[in-house]
Length: 482
Image (tube, rainbow, N blue to C red; front, side, top):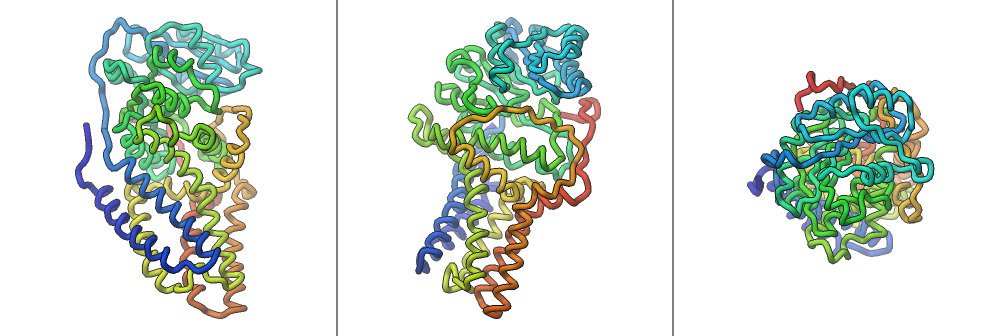
């Protein structure tokens, strides 16, 4: 189903494009020194991201069921595991064996080589696979590829060890593969967390993935994804160049001429981290993989992709770059401006007149798409994670992969929010310093605006550290309708 109606997204997008262009054009007319030029570049980079988002996701394709498919097709179900809790893994294995599709084979790919996992496989009549090179190639893609070489199904369904799966997934989604150019079908991820938790990420699943789906460039989300074996054969299996296999495998399938489909419906129910340290690790891995591909594979220059697909792959890396590099640079520039009474732009009051309308509309746009969740603000709040991911990605070398253990009790680790805390302290100190030394100036009003913005964007990490612990609900499919 295609969606092109002028809904709230479109109307807010048009409003932002008008106010954003007015602001950035005006700003170009008041540049006087190096500081103002740097500030202009940073502001232009942020506005470019918003324009890229609007362009890529203006048209969206909502795909659900794919219709019937031949029951003669064999589906290999891969459950990857290393050291997850055995009770959590058993829920996953049980749900996989209860998938309605008859012609399936369930495999447990155990990188932990645990006897209790082997017993679990026997209990549920699953095949058990342990690869011999697990200590040399310590990443998930190598685990998948070993199983890939030992199995022969026409299609492969991948499931994370902490995810229960809906029994109709194959009946509902295999039909998409009637199109021989479809390489994978990804489904929406759902987590048993509160509605306003950022892990729900409505912006990504409802808008970004459906926009990518319009152009056949949907991203594999790792779990609840079905792959065509022939397509994987054509690109040499699950991709091991990145830390995690899903994004780069999606990219390589598109490069090989295959379409990636996204079903905007939940077929999985998984755990999401509530401890900020675990969130850092998980989001840092995603950012590293994305930025590594963005920097070293240069998707904008990939002539085997359509221009629309190039823009999609460029956007996902660019988001992390803006969050990790551009936004904190603006914070620093405003602190510098306060300490040295060096206006970024000389006409301070007019700056607010032109800036505030476009900024308010942009916030309104992202908050509307996020349905009240803090996902868009977390992009800015996690800037230390994304900055470090960018720095590591520049080094090219791939570090060792370690699975994210999500069922970890929340720790009150103040040290990990030290960068955000220091920015707040530096902001307050620069304001006080400016008032003492220069008095109440127009410059103070401009920088107060940015200080309020900074606090607003950084607040989610303080909430995760000091606020009430986020709820984590049962993963039972009987109590959660997906």
